[in-house]
Image 1 (cartoon, one colour):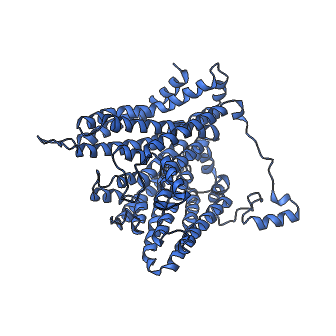
Image 2: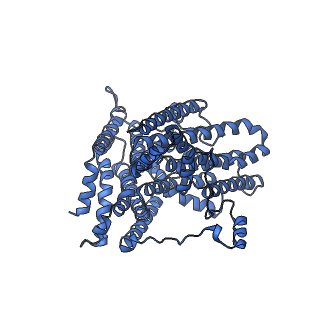
Image 3: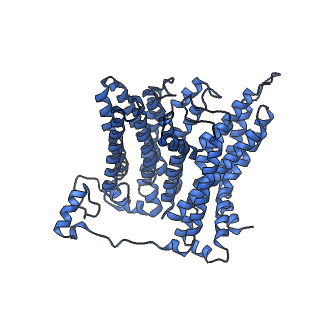
Length: 551
């Protein structure tokens, strides 16, 4: 047996959390079938009930794999490099291909065990009747195995490139979310149009496993909007998934050599030391020059806030301004091409695109900023240094929290020009725009609260980042799977109750996005998001105060 497989797999299975997680997965997926098992002497001969149970079962497995599959492989190689054991592995007699095989099966073995624990529930679904063995059950597990293959290879590739475990996790979940959710967006808005862009969007959406799983589960369309089409969806996903996996495997194996330890370092450049003409030119090119020597911290400014901005890459002002102006230009461009008739979109469609754009930025960026507020300091030993400073615990915690709030507020303001253009075109949308902005503000508050509270509960940044992304994606993206499966098996009442937990769905419902206009989510979504955010922020404050006390 490959020794790397044994080491990686045993390391994951020795944790009590892994045992508890596997047990919970087996219990939950078994209960999904037990609760819908035919009662009494009546049996559904048409197979409709078994199809409904099978769909709930399939969507549950899909959500579980999307959240769990990238976690272990994303930290595998980079953790070996930072601990110094990767050099020992490369110096062993094992060839590089065998090392990669050991890594792959070692980190994916735990996710495969999750699939194995779901087999009793799948067998019960099949025993209820109405489900094809080859086109239903085996096809579903085939797609799920492809998901494990694709996401594991991509996570190992990112792990070989990243410099730290938390960076690898952030980049992996960023890429997975784009492939699984964001890739569906272009086809949703370009459907039914002629040209090359709709064709590319149709192929792009097949990067997501959702269309393939829906076809296997017997659903061909989402609300009649053409978001998911059954023609060639499964085959396209198989082709694209295998191509992406093969490319990631080849790229990662090519990096598993001694050059992986080489880190090119820039010689550096300080703008203040350049010639006068060059300094003037850079002042015209840069609103905030990243290479200019920073001024001192003013007396009334929280030094922890300045420290956070200057120490992390996406917290620095030059990156924040790039994101801000990029989103502002994109929002204005979308409204302009729609109003001039370049694209046959109405104002509501543009509003839906802005909601998706803004929500995606919040969900992708906020956990990466907030999940390391406390955990990164505790892991690196910086928390003790902060406690030794004259700063009080309240000022430290406030500076940490504000270092995340300001970038998120800047992201929220980035799409305001687009909404302003919409209001100028159609003033009757004023109330609707205000409600949408309220939903987005609550989404940002929830993202900050989740990341901050999780950061205070875990000592390691990698674990905190994984949990923060998992919780936020479950609320904002996982609940969307129930909406995807509306009418079969979930009724309108069930879908509406679930979507009331999702502020992004509430914004789409207010905007009357096709497929969401039938649901009344306001003000229930506001109450749920506000109360949950308040509870999480209180948890963050209490836990941070406890950690800030003298030891």
